[in-house]
Picture 1 (spheres, helix red, strand yellow):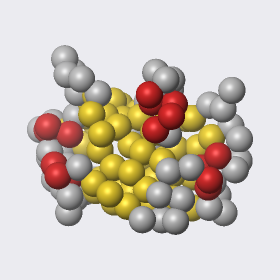
Picture 2 (cartoon, rainbow, N blue to C red):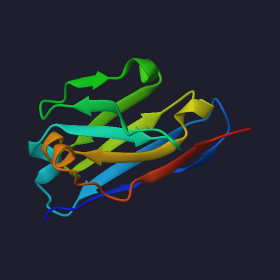
Picture 3 (cartoon, one colour):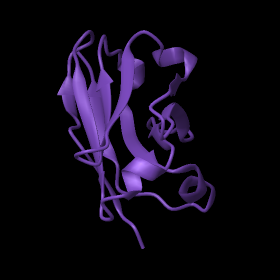
Length: 117
């Protein structure tokens, strides 16, 4: 079974930035599937944040448009989420996944992002 591992989380003040990374145990995995970032705030349901097609075409949730950038490096086989102008509402655990894995309830441990003053 392929494992997805998130990294790059941390604690920042409002307006700060963080860059998350996601790697797969199978090198080719990141390059051949549409990849998605999700997040789950304390006491709330997991929600979709952004996706990027194998072609590189991105799509974003309204609440992160203009602030977050999703990208993928097919050479390094890594998925990224650059987060700028962070708000307290962005606090939560961030997960990377494929649509099929998400629908099947397969998730990694995620990366904790905390935005507070």
